[in-house]
Image (cartoon, rainbow, N blue to C red; front, side, top):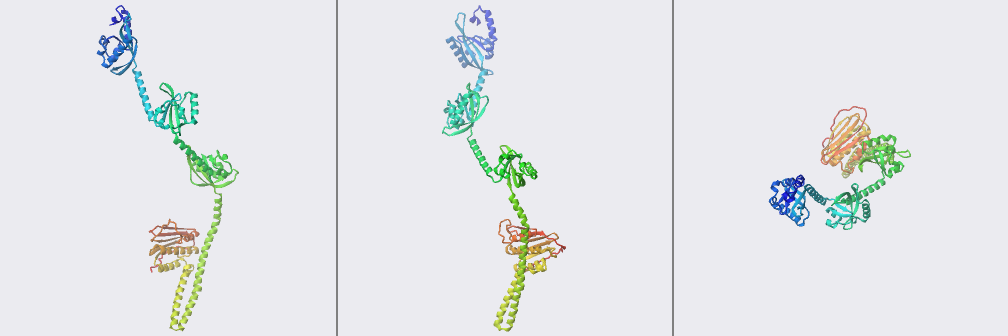
Length: 610
């Protein structure tokens, strides 16, 4: 075969050339004009996996698939017809997969210049082709991801739009990316940003040393402004330097920021207009203060900012203020404030920790309570007088009741008795008709006398002053049961001795008022009264199991509770009422009651059923 190519006289050249071609890593072959293989090197054998002894002299169609043979024949035909080299891309199915080769086919001529064969040298470009295909796949995948991105994406080259995704189209109100391709990028911006971005881009010539982020305003297709945040970096797009911009619509963020600024401005107005002094500080260092705080401390706001809050507290109050700050205590407390002129004032403070722009700060509100302190002092000064006045009022009331009772008994009672005696004498002197009239008059006088006596006893029974509390209560229970039908279960301890007149009167009146309420409202046939007197205190309990009432509900004082509480308060004690609808009522009272004597330990029942 080689003799056909080189001639018999070129044996040495043939040997050298043969060895050179055999050791070349690129597959090389030579085929006759009709397609028979005349020469193949080792690289070709490795590629085709056909030994040279089987390939030489055989046609292309005898060794390869019909499709591969067709492509090889077609390429050879073109070389033969043109007589010039031809570069083709060949695909070869090998055992380890498909390989791609860049093959240069060239005409082979003999010494006389006659075209006698076609040669070919192939370079394996499989790695390059696979890398290109992977790059194209990655680019396609990237574009697909960019198209699905919720943020707008645009590629700009020389200020012209080279690529946009669907989100960018929606951002500006366009239907298809093709409507924006080739558009000048600055034409998509509002007038306020157009010149600024154009000049900046031209000045830098897209030479972005690092990704940059900034805000712009786009012009929507319908004419409205769309604020956006852009993140730009440099890329190579289709082999040319370009800018890749990620665009995010920040309309809602802008609205939120505007609302926040308005809210902050409104809060600032409230802060400055507040009547209370308000100070904002961090770890005790004043960050801000309103005018009320500056006026209260008699300095300017600028004089307060940057200083410690302890400088505006009197020395005796600084430890208290420091401790409240350290403990983040939110309870209201009192401290003495210090003014710039050195004067002090009593203040009421309340403070709370909060987070402002990621920092923990404390908001403190201060109120000057000088007037309140004066009022409290005045009230404290008048409290003993008021208490003495109330006590004297009750004493006068009891004295007046006693006087009226005595007058009813001594004056009116004696007069009625005298009239009854006079009518008795007339009864013995007159006729029958006169005697009947006199008898009726005497009956009326006796009834009136009883009513006067009863009224006198109710105003203030004389036995309370003459005999003491226990006989007066027993007498009252007997009359109460007879009049109302309510039995009183009475138990007592220590009442055998006398004690203070105020205490005896208060006990009697509270029992009298409470039992009146039982008869009027409870709807029961029995009530209990418990009284215990020892060396230190008197304890009183009155209870029924009747209708009860809602003790927490507001009500008018138709039950005399305020009067009872006033009596107990004047004695330095406390009165409590426990009641609920359908569960009865329990009234308890206790006040200090000293005096000599021992508890007799006696229990007594009183009342009796009518």
